Length: 113
Length: 118
Image 1 (cartoon, rainbow over the protein chains, first blue to last red):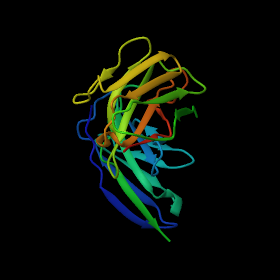
Image 2: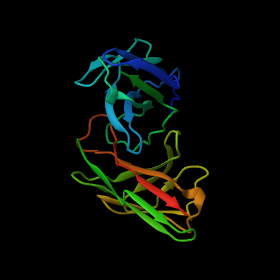
Image 3: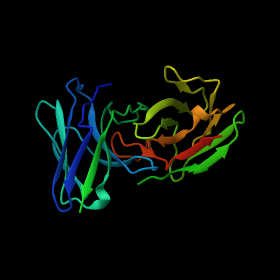
Image 4: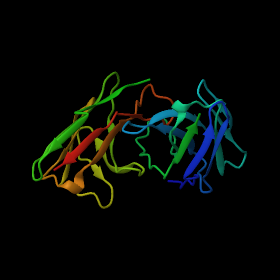
């Protein structure tokens, strides 16, 4: 399983765009990149997943360069409710696999008024 | 998305007693579920992989006789903390993969169970 490295914490203000970068130098060819969000005393919630280039959904965008050794989660116009811990995960192929997810340290994002 | 529930949401017990935590996939079947433990201000730590109809696979350092896992059906896995001690107090989270309808490598997580051992 590829190891990931993220900043321990980040601060920003409401209305700003927040970019959280994750390094995964040992990512394997078949690995996907997935981001989860966790609020205190709750289970993690899936945000976005990608394999290469750019993926966008209603919540966030995920940018993955050609070498796939890093990825950036972009949260547009954050609000106070985006204060949470964000985990970058790199894992095995999705199809029918029972592969486990190993969580890294995550990034604690704090949004201020 | 798919829903995973846990019961109870919080439990307080005396030292030496056993506590059972249930994890259910509500609208999908899961042959594999996962159990995590999370201490305050720390990341989730994978404890074991629960396999329907067979023995669980435990991560290194996790006592299988202390944390009993039973995955008796495709929608239910249970974690029993036996002879609980204060150091077992933690937030326990389960997850399951919707292998036939999920998106990619997505796993769905339960809301967690807060265990406090007095």
